[in-house]
Length: 263
Image 1 (cartoon, rainbow, N blue to C red):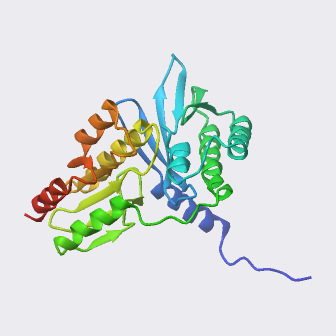
Image 2: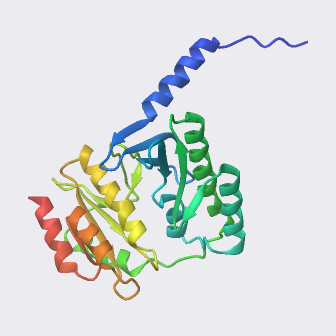
């Protein structure tokens, strides 16, 4: 019989894991309730964020604010295709979650059972991994990217593609480009077709969260007016939280914000 000796005491391991979970867990008060960054990530490597808001007396509402299905759609996944929709519906049934458009939510009674919060997060994580059901087509470089890279070249600037930034609640938020001028400028190109409001609400929260850690950050969001129709609510969010929210072809405005950031 082979005897395996303990290489670490169980109490030491428990303490180490508890310390990690405590450090990774972030809870912030919002105008509506609480935003909770769970100590686990989705398939994209971002921490899962759950919003908890009060409901009727003795109840609270857990919500992902559309991040999970919105993230799949943003990566090119057809979330209404039969195969994906069936998998999503199965996970929702097993975890007792509900769906309203892109939003996933669940009502819980108080006092809040932490196991139910964990189950909610695990369901979100499982759904994020459904992107593997989709085999993305080879894409040519988007015209918005080409235009933006030309602006960087014209100004002799180096931009980091796919840079990650840390917010107070969300960690490792990926942006399309980061220009590290005296005031850093982060660029995000809207690539989603169809209804944009859930994506704008998600990025509105992210930009505010990132600026809590880096107040000098200048967010820029660009869209393609030929393929995307910006509704009033989406435009209001973009213009409120961003240093610049405009069409990618408005290069004079992009030059202007980069010039401002360099001062």
